[in-house]
Length: 96
Image 1 (cartoon, rainbow, N blue to C red):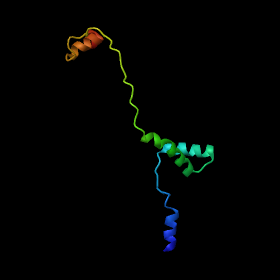
Image 2 (image 1 turned 45 degrees about the vertical axis):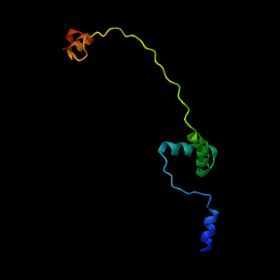
Image 3 (image 1 turned 135 degrees about the vertical axis):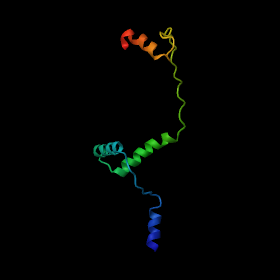
């Protein structure tokens, strides 16, 4: 029983978990593993250390987007509820 307690003390700072990765993320990790010749554990920890601080920062306010108003002129059809009049205006009398 003392061995179990000792092993718990030795491993208390490590968390083991199963992680399911999306195919695109797995492919990026595999590519980086080959390029850097490092283990998956090291690579995932490095990536998380870089990315997680940005997730805890408050979001920066976005600049407001503004579109200029442009006059398109008078509507060519008296009422858009009248489908026949709209088709005549768009395609001429021969739309039928």
